[in-house]
Amino acid sequence: MHSPPVKYLILIEAAGAMQARLFDAQRRHVADLDSATEEIPGMLAGLRPTPGADPELWGSALKGHSEAECREAQVYTLPV
Image (tube, rainbow, N blue to C red):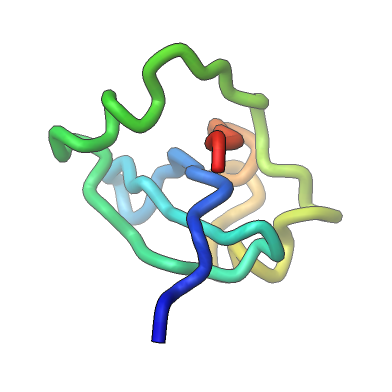
């Protein structure tokens, strides 16, 4: 079974470290990566983030993150 393509990448702090969280178009969690991995810059090349993860859009997907972490997050929409 194939997983749906990744549509969003969110850079967000988690326990003091930056994490790259990957989500599909329905904002379902797909995977987490350390934001320092070499794949991340390639995925984000040429893209501009939306600052902050809007709680109305991302509240349940980012459950467990603080309000401050969500406010400081960078949301990237990836070309699919």
